[in-house]
Image (cartoon, rainbow, N blue to C red; front, side, top):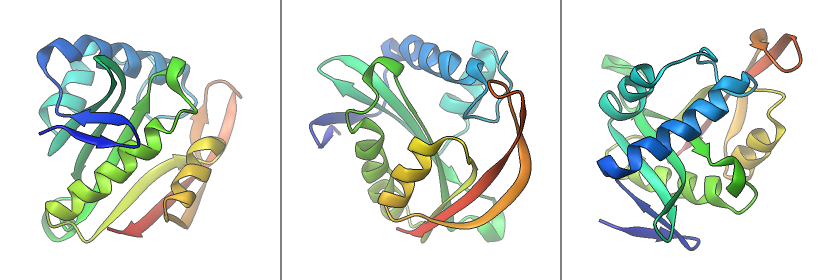
Length: 168
């Protein structure tokens, strides 16, 4: 089913979208400044993480161009499975266009549809100010900060991470 949020088409990916998703993931993760995944993560790791294990995976498209992707999963299994978790990547050439916000709006609706009560981001790098500001704009609150939990590759130092949460 195609859903349009803020002019962005958000759909489940087809195999034809996988390479564009991998290229975005690789570009963002290899910088080592926003995601905890190893900068040298390979395509097999990406496919397991982003395509095989999540509850749902989506792509954001402008026309037929993949401009973003996100995954939705349970935050923890068992007695924590009522809490959602999501990860978002926007193509670097398409940032500041509202794509991450559109994907987040979509993810919150999807989370509710799947019976989740809230969504939690476990590891938001504190220096990723665009993400922190966006998630706060979307109603997420910083409920904890873990000092020096992230080895920031670009700054070559340890930085804090935030745990962010909101009801769905």
